[in-house]
Image (tube, rainbow, N blue to C red; front, side, top):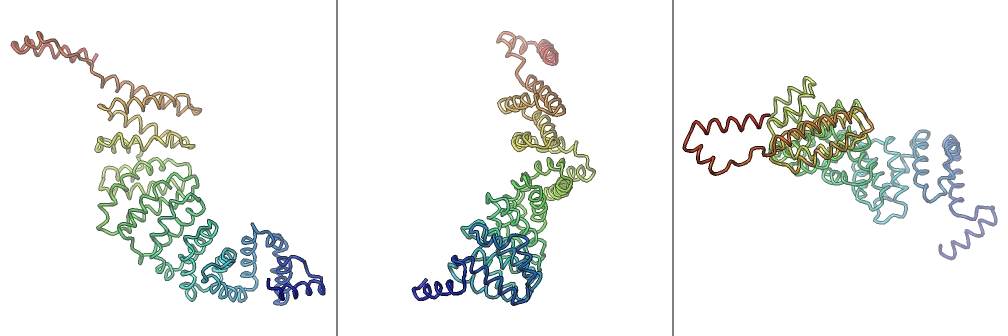
Length: 418
């Protein structure tokens, strides 16, 4: 502080027995102001929730500011809205030292504001801080965007943020990803917002890893959003989107067996949409009838050239903590392995993996792994060459005598079948 201010501050402390620390003085001042405004209920609520002590801790200060905003919004809304007007001006500055607590107060107060009136200025502030280096700031911004996106008019203005939001889906922060998916879900439900082809491709790619997210709410939101991408994408971008849609077939099929009923139901609906997108009426029929035990065979019969690719996709599900998903993966792998003739190395790898699963803690999994192991082992033996090249003298004899040639190959076939 400047010297003259510091001198005044010391004199005031002596005369009025004020706390020596400015932070404690600020808290006392805030309490006095709230009492003067007849907002005693806010003071009591913060005391009951230890809010005043939390305000004094640098690490928890912004949480306490959020609590203050919620209580003020409930008991003295007009004052809360007046503060927001000051905060908008404060947050428009380049390097505001109170950015985080100011943003927290703003976001908490949004539910009490008329978004139609101040939505544009709030959106500008949130957009500017979306790529802040502070993870907590980004989380708060996304909380604010979730509120704004629920208003149709404001959501339409947010269409320009779609590409930036898609990039955030790759972030390692689970809470950030969850809120980003929520915002994108609200935006895509707005019929006035059309995804460009490049953004639809990026979104489809970013969403698929989230199908296996540990948070079931992220799983559910990402599956629903993926379905929306297929519906709302531009027509000219459908062809480019096709590989990403095909890539989602197996993950969605496996999650139809998810223990979370809502995830399983959403996966089934999305899988039906994928089958329609790929023009696979045979798969559509199976999914509609909920005859999922036929899905793997039907898929592989027409796409046997992709058997190895599908197998690689299925392998991670053998590590799933959910037994139904592991079981579905083993069944698929056992069936797909039969289409790997001519690929002995990949077939051998699959056999070894199944062999390891025979000791699984689940009796059902170990029994199923053993069955699949035997089927693929038999297929491997059948694929190995059993008929040796006949010697030259026998080839010559067969050439000169057609009857002998027929008898010879008949014997070979019989021995091979045996």
